Length: 263
Image 1 (cartoon, rainbow, N blue to C red):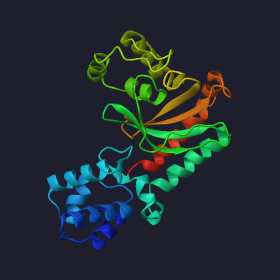
Image 2: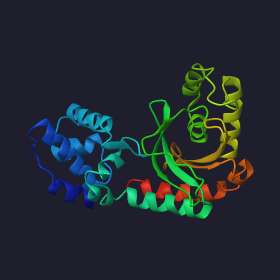
Image 3: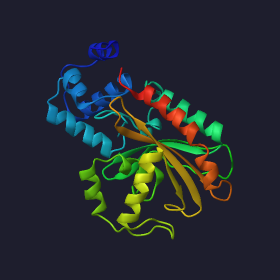
Image 4: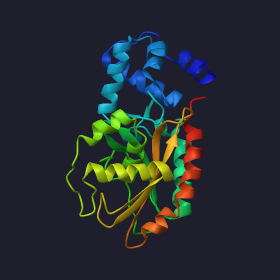
C-alpha cells in the first residue's frame, strides 16, 4: 500500500452512516488521494462494492467527480471549485496537469485541452486559453462528437478492429459544417492516416472557421487513454501552422502521461 493510501486509510471513517455522509466521505477521500477508484472506496470507507459504484455514478452525474485518463480512476471535478476551492487546489492530479497545459498554451499562444472518450463522445476535462484575444476555449465537462473532432479521431484510430466496425455502422453522420466527414469509408481512410502519422488534424469539421490538432496520450501498456488538443481560429492560424505545433504537443503529451501514471 502506498504512503498516500495509508494516510487516507487513517483519516477515513470505517463506518459511514447516511447516504449524504457517504457522498461527502467519497469526496473527502478524492480530495486527499487525488484520484480514487471503486476499490479504494470499498477498502478505505468499508462500503460494499455496489454502493461504491453507485456513489461514483451519482457524484459523476452531479459533476462533482469526473473520469481521469487512468482506467477506473476519478478525481474532483471543476464544479466543486465554487463550493470549496481548497478541494481542487489540494489534489495531487490537477496541479501538474494544469501547469503543463498552461505551458502548452504559452508556447503556442493557442487554447489547449485534455480530452477523454466517454460514452461514445469526446469529453474535455481541462482547458487553458491561449494568450491572443481571438481565442477559443472548451469548458471542462463539454462534450463533442468523435467523428468530426481531432481528439475524437485520435480515439477512433486506437479502437480495436471489432469496436471500430461497430462505430462505423453508426454512420453516415449528420454534417455539422460543410466540411464534416459524414461517410464511414472516408472516415476510415482518415483514421488509417491518423494512426500512421501519430496525430489528427481538423479544419472546420466540427466548428466552422476553427482549425485544430490532437495527439494521443498513452498508458504504460500503450493504450490511448486521453488526447492533448490545440485549437485556433482560422482567421489567425492556418491548418499547416497548427500541424507545425504537433511536436510540441507530443512532448507535453508524454509529460502529462508521466504526471497521471499511478505510482
